Image (cartoon, rainbow, N blue to C red; front, top):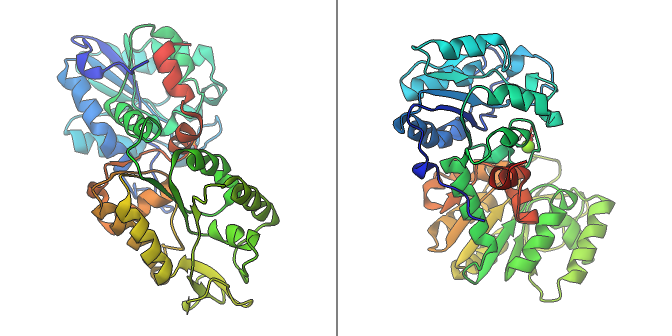
Length: 395
Ligand code: 3PG
Ligand code: MG
């Protein structure tokens, strides 16, 4: 079933309730400022469209952080409300709570146009997918829009239960639709060769993604800390590299399943004696016993880049090394450049690799940079997400 289109919705004079994922990183010290506004920026086209289509009121819902059902000023959406007001050039009223009478009173006032409800996770019902909470929020509008792709893997009151109150009156936002279409295209007859580049910390965190990718792709290029358990499983020395026994066992299983020889592993490394210590080039696959691998080396960069050049579809998740440290960033940045340069359909998902792509300055050369971390991986693993299913079929 296709997702409906917000472009064709009749919103004239209607009150709209919309869920966004404004879960943005904030600075640790006061005053708390947003350190990366991408998630809000990506929601702006949906907000503008709702307003352009003549909605009389827009009530926005979001979570921020994990306050666990309790009011915690540290996780207030205040910086988000301020940023939205600046970006939209209009007032954005932040409610004191998502469900007090104040919200209803506010919405009665003719001058009120846009309300942002305070962090929905301040209420214990949200993460319990509570129907009563959903019903209360549903009273703020006649139309529900869900643009919170980043939270669509959560079965929560404002992403899931709420759909029960908007039968045939719910729409995906523009970002939600683009995410589902772009990530969906990876699974639905992708142009071949299809290459996945997977990195990041642990095999156990990504086991389902790796298994799914092994079915979908022609070649799987593995880098980052995740590579060492695979190397060890093949009897290669990994020195002091991050490598749990659990991950080595999982890697062994995956290598056994890989009858087509799709999995490619690093041939050389950039090592250090300690985490983040002075970089030591290592032209060997085996890592000396007193060293740990922290990035892929030049031979691996060349081999992986050659693969990438042949691809027609590319999915990337997870950095190739400790890219936050410039001594170990070359592998990740080289992969970002190589992918940016292809004519392939290219998708990057997952917090760290998205940050790396942004750092490379070439984000606009990717076909799609996903706003979802966990959500993008879960969608690839399962082919569906609770928040999207509820939007399509109701609750
Ligand atoms: C995210 O950043 O992953 C989404 O906003 C969902 O947040 P959560 O992982 O705290 O549920
Ligand atoms: Mg998350």
